[in-house]
Image (tube, rainbow, N blue to C red; front, side, top):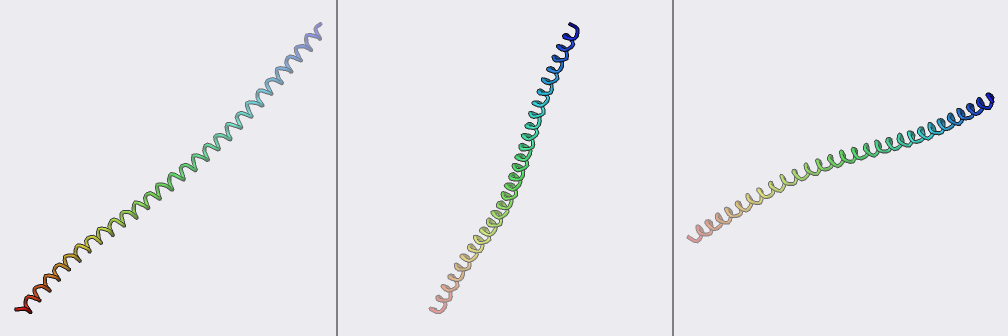
Length: 103
């Protein structure tokens, strides 16, 4: 009777150990999956950060290019205005010269 009780207790203890080991195995598997997901998320975050930085650099470069083009456009407009003024002055001088020749 006592040996039966000891055997049953031994079997129950072994069953409990087996269940605990199985649960530990499952928890370790879940932990490994979580670690892999975290690593993937960190990689995705790094890629997103790099893409954001590249986009900011591109935007900054494009902004600088646009500023340069605006400055060139203003310079051209200014030159065009000066040319138009010079053309008007030249026309006035020609007209004065023509009048002088006619006198």
